[in-house]
Length: 288
Image (tube, rainbow, N blue to C red; front, side):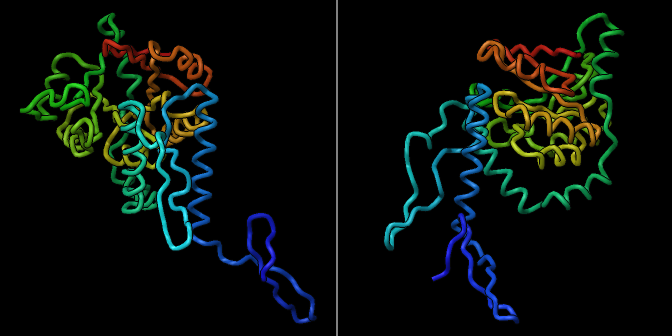
């Protein structure tokens, strides 16, 4: 029987001089799945230590458990999302995993060569403030929301974006989540290709750096990061990727729900924009 060292299975190999060495055997796929789950649990623990209540994925344990010839999936109360944001994040985690399989990061990086150059999102807000003496306005292109359903049946993203621009908006926020907000990256591309000069914020629920590259490839000039979802290290890492790609980063905090979030975000190096999401849906922007 092969001996075990730690969690690795090893097998003896006889060398030319007769001495024996050991080499690792291939790790079973089931063991890799368990390891992935353990990493997910560690992420959840880090998030909880920073006051983050949104779990990145269902805490179901290893995907499969074996008892004799039977397989079953662990079921418990943790498999049910505790609120709508958690439900969105769990769905987004699965969605992004599928998209990454179809368009690996290496292929996505090549697409950046054909992306339109990024525009100065923060500069547009500052310029609007200097011109009008009022805060720069980010107007939102959104067809639906989970709480209110369809907001506008005759939804034409380009016409809406153009009307916002004529009305004096400094920048535009475009919802790209399809399942819960009826948005799409196609809408983002249509607005960008229509000649709208306002810089565009990709309002997506980011759980993976892959989404940042995808947003830039589709023509985004800025991207949203949600402090209620992302630990400090993720925000710092993703902000650096955004700077490398020429994207602005808007970090959303929910002051009413969790006052600790803004304290966390202010301490993160490199943050230039903080959005405060209030209960009454007013979205205030702090420009550092």
